[in-house]
Amino acid sequence: MTTLIILCSFAPQFAISFFSGVWADKYNRKKLIIIADSGRALATLALIIYMMAGHESIAVLLFIAAIRSVATGVQMPAVNAIIPQIVPQNKLIKVNGFNGSIQSLVNLAAPAVAGAVLFYGEIQYIMMIDVISTVIGISILLLISIPKHKRALEAVAAGYFADFKDGLKYSKNHPFLKPLFITYAFFTVLFVPAAFLSVLLVTQVFGANYLYLTVNEMSYFIGTLIGGLIIGVWGGFKNRVKTLIVGLFAFGALSLGFGLTQTFWIYLVLMALVGLATPFTYSPIMSLIQEKVDPDKQGRVFSLLQILFTSLMPFGMLFFGPMADIVPVQTLVVYCGIGIVLLSIAVAFNKNFYRQGLSEVKTETKSS
Image (cartoon, rainbow, N blue to C red; front, side, top):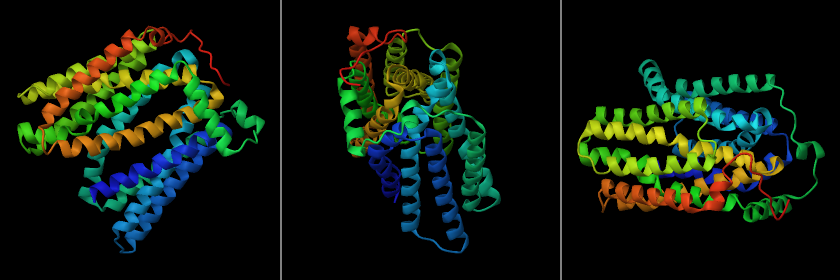
C-alpha cells in the first residue's frame, strides 16, 4: 500500500510535467497556480465528504492522491517561474532560502499538529486544515497584483509540441543548463540513502526506538530550517556555483560521517548539519535558473527539472531500497557520501561552469 501511494503521488506529477512547463510559459502563471491549488483542495474536500458518509476505499484514496499529484505538477513550474516576476534578481537566492525555511518549518510542525488533531478528532479534520489553508493562500494570492509575463501577453499561438520541443532545444543548447542538470541528476540519486533511508539506518544501528526515530526527523528539518535562514539572511557567495559546491561537499562529507558513527547523539548532530547543508544545494540551483534562463522559457526549464526529480528520486528508491535488505544502510550512505563529495570536486574543476555562477555573467544560447 505504501508503494502504491508513493507511485500515485509521483507518477502523475512526472507525467503532467511534460505539459505544465509549456502552460507556465504560455498562460497566466498566477491563474495556473490558483487553478492547481483549487483543484487540489476540491479533491481533498471530495475525499472528506466521501469518508464522512461512512465510505472507505483504498482505490478512492489512491485516485485522490493522483489528482493532488497532477495539481502539484502543474503548480510547481508556475510557482518557480513567477518568483522572478516579483523578486529583484539580486534577492532571488535569499527568497529561495527563506522559502526553504518555511517549507522546513511546515515539515517540522505538521506531524505535531496532525498528532494533536488526531488526539481530539478524526483524520478528516486534518484534511480540512489542508482545504482551509489552501483557501487562505488563494485569497492572499488574489490580492497580489502580478503582471503577466511577456509571452502570456502576446498570446503566442504555437502548438504544444512545438513549444515543448523549443524548450528542450533551448535547454540542450544552453551552455549553463546542461552541466547544472547533470549535477542535479547525480545528486538526486546519490542523496536518497541519507535523506530517505535514515529511518532504516536508525533502526538497524540504534534500534527501533520511537523517540530515536522522532528526533531523527526533527534534527534534519531543524537543520534545513536554520540553513534556509542562513541563506536568506546572508545570500550565499557572490558566485552561486561556489555556494552549490560548498553545499554538495558539506552534504557528502557530513553524510559520510553519520554513516560511520555508532553513537546516536553524534549521529543527530551530523544529521542536523546535513539538513543545514541541504539549502546550500537547492537554493542556488533554483536561483541560477531564475537568473540565467529567459523569463519566457523558465516554466519549461523548471518542468524539466521536475521531470528529473520525479523520475530519478523514485529510481533511487527502487535501487537503494532493495539494496538495504542486502547491504547495511550505513554502507550505502558512506558510498553515496563519497560520491557526492566527488561530484562537488567535479563541479569545482569545471571552470567554465564555475565562472558562469556569477549573477552578472550573461549566457548566450544557440537558440532563442
